[in-house]
Length: 288
Ligand SMILES: *Cc1c(COP(=O)(O)O)cnc(C)c1O
Image (cartoon, rainbow, N blue to C red):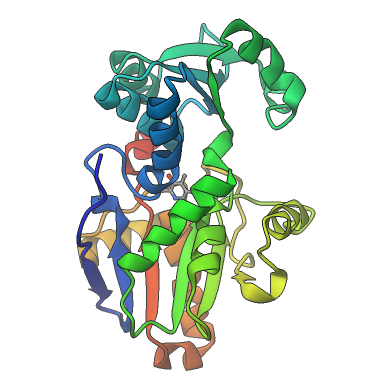
């Protein structure tokens, strides 16, 4: 699966200094940042004949959805460890994953919490000695490296780049690839009572220092995958005005925060801003 040679940017009519970089158009299925993040794993798996590729995610996971399709395209076995229970209604996301040949194993939520620990992975790696482990969201130095690819599509006039944050891999890659003097801002998709200390520590561990980015967190009043009424209305309004579809987990929250900031800090309206649409539209089926 090749990276696109060009990605469109669309101006936000209400704020013409803001362009939305259309990562949702990177690939019909492996949308947004997932193609960049998965590509190093896919290439390594092909080269070393590692199978299956094992990863973790929720029942609407964009990451597992992208991995399942990429595995199908490249003839690589995939195994998804999914937070939930066998007897829950099958989500459209998991139905697609299975159609593309991914094996699904449900993991109870209390056990899923330990998904970052080696002890979580050991039984799976013992059972599949040739397997490749892919952490949640693809978090790894190679995925972070590959996320610098975004810079191939960002206009050189840009002063500020804004991106939604899940695992932080995309933010880390963008910070690492940023030309001097450009501000990079992340908008988390999840609420965090410890004020994102764990995220900041994770980023610091891969050499991304707090001085190199900002997090806009003050407009987030709901948890991961949940939208407040205000953000829902914003999403509807934005989509009808721009014809750019947003996803409910990441991009709607990010652009909601961007609008709030532009209104409360007019100086930002003098800057050339690129807001990255990271795709993920399949996840909207969680809202039906
Ligand atoms: C996975 C995903 C993200 C999160 O990216 P990270 O690199 O994990 O921070 C953001 N937006 C969308 C649409 C996604 O699917």
